[in-house]
Image (cartoon, rainbow, N blue to C red; front, top):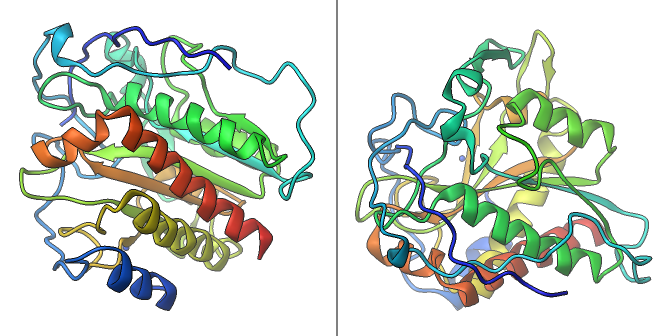
Length: 307
């Protein structure tokens, strides 16, 4: 499938079950996996930390400073899916944010019900200091992940594909996965933390019950999905688990994210790295590394679905 190698437009920025297999992978695949958690290492410039509570921060607007982005054309396959190990399985990929959210701040600031309270519909996401937007990163990695999963026979649904003016809101993102009766949902993100905070982490749903939220049936399965993704992500990308969230495990459990609270199917968020750290940013803006990130996630999802 052809790719569009045009330079992405610049955007403004936004501002934990630990698996034994993951520990083993850390020891064999990458050095320095035992970083301590730093609760203060949250999104700089944001009113609240985390992928659902991201505020804007300034970034360079030089197009030449942004990396070349690869994305396949077309939102859905035009030919029958190949038969493979994931035939009959449905995976929903949720690219974090939307490239045009920044143009619809009034709409994305509207509060929506997340079961245990109310939160903003969506946020703009972060960016590298050079202006490469998280929303562009998440779409690119999501396209790569879709192709890898489809090649194994999986039916893949994206919550959006740069085909709407803003959003979808976090409650709708959860609803898309639920209505698809997905076997797994992965929300792709990148963090916006302080310089020196490096590495990836996978966010798992906490045991939450209240209002329209009840994660009791998905906590265990989501933890399994997250641990498998984390293990394969280490092995495939060479990136270490976060040195500021998760106590060196690469896993973080949260109960304040609507996209997880409202899910009735196994779901995790993957924060692929910290866009505000120069070393992580160099990886996130590299097309070759983004392919590895997609491969790591695909391998983790496949391992989970195969049992």
